Every structure is written in structure tokens, then in C-alpha cells.
Length: 182
Image 1 (cartoon, helix red, strand yellow):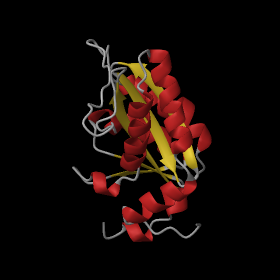
Image 2: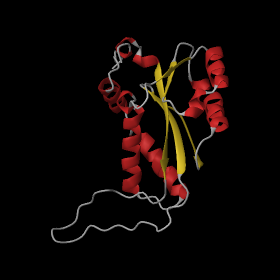
Image 3: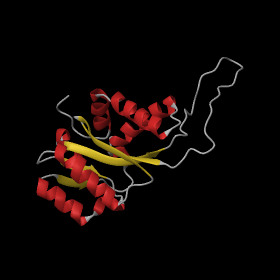
Image 4: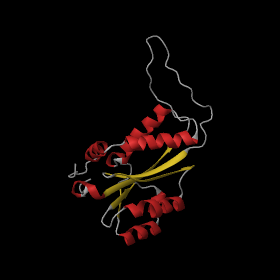
């Protein structure tokens, strides 16, 4: 936290995973006075779909999804094939402390590309602006109430599209990063 205001926010990209399913529905709704707000939720929401994304002040860098969770091989492939081609030497990839993020081979791949690797302190979502991205994306997914995996993927894309630069600038500043480009 002491050093984060010195980091060049334009060169920071944050990576995180989240889970969603086709049973997501809004937590709140409006209804005429005296009437119930009602929604249908499938009895079986299906397997969770894991979404992995990378955001910086430049917007969405890369994203992918799969049924179930990402393992170390999936994660490394994602970084190598989808993230690294979009990063420049001198960029910093910021990760939480999930065990799949701590592979030595991943550190070597990033170092060879000239990309710095930083880990957030444990249990520090307030320092990770991508947590706000997921919050906005999930609220849009809930509002769209996708009931198939195809609809869920479309809803996630709609959520990604709804994240605008002013959101990212605000979330970076809120997390304590010095933003000079906005």
C-alpha cells in the first residue's frame, strides 16, 4: 500500500477469476405497491462457469471462460496465449494469491517478456480494481437473467462492454493508485 501510489497506473493490469451460472437473477426488483416482484430461477442452475479477465486503464486486455474452474495449466495457457501478446515490456501484471498464480514457469514466461509480476497482499480486494469490474459485470448478468450457457456468455460480454474508461479511472483511484492519464 505504501508503494502503490508510485506505480504507473497506465502500466498496471489486474487479473482475476470469478464464477457465474445460468441461475443468476437480480437480488432486488420493483413492483407496484402491494404486489410481489417475481422472477423465475431454474431449479438446476447448471455447472458454474469460470470467467477469467484482465483489465487495465486501457480497458479489457483479455478474457476467457470455461465450465468448472481454471487449473494451473489453463491459467498458464491463458496468460501465455491471450494476455502476453497484448502486454508491452514494462507492464505489470497484478495477481491475487491464488495457488495457480504462483507457478515458477509463469514467472519465467513473464520475466522473459519483460512483464513485471506483483502479488496483492492476502485478503485485499480493496486494492484490486477488477473486483469492481466483476461487480458491475455480475449486476448486468443478473439483470439479463441468462438461462443457457450461450446466453450467459452473451450477458458477460454485455457486462464487459458496459465497463467504460471513467469506471476504470474511478476504480483505480478508489483502490489507491495514482492515475495521471485521465
